[in-house]
Length: 140
Image (tube, rainbow, N blue to C red; front, side):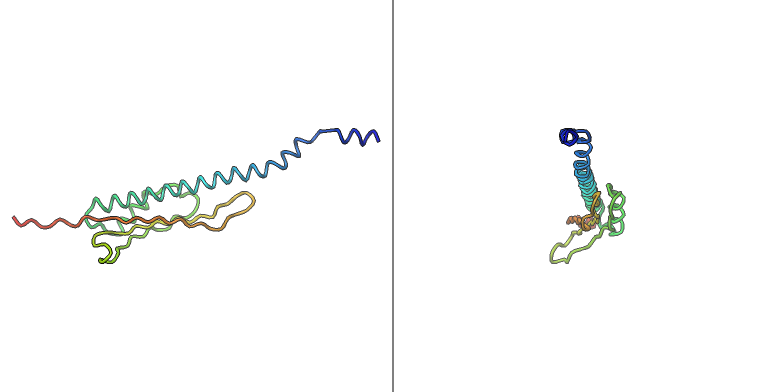
């Protein structure tokens, strides 16, 4: 009976059990914060690539779509985890906008936590860019 009483009041190993319960939750939070940070960094890289593509489109009169795509591909960052799909440049119908281009960037990632993975996330950003019409020939 005395041994049972001593065993009930002995707290050796209690800290190890508490750590065993708390450590998986802590790891889940740390990896969750890391995954969200990676996704936000990729989002910033997408916005930067769109901005550089828009700047390139407005600075050069009637740039080629392939040159705009190359500029956006060269300007992206934060894509070390996930897939940055090839940007698309489309020209809307002339009834919608006569001198503009639509730029689109897509990023696909599967967030991976320690104990499980979330479904694939696809982030898409669009930007409409107005292109200056080519200068009129001088008549002088």
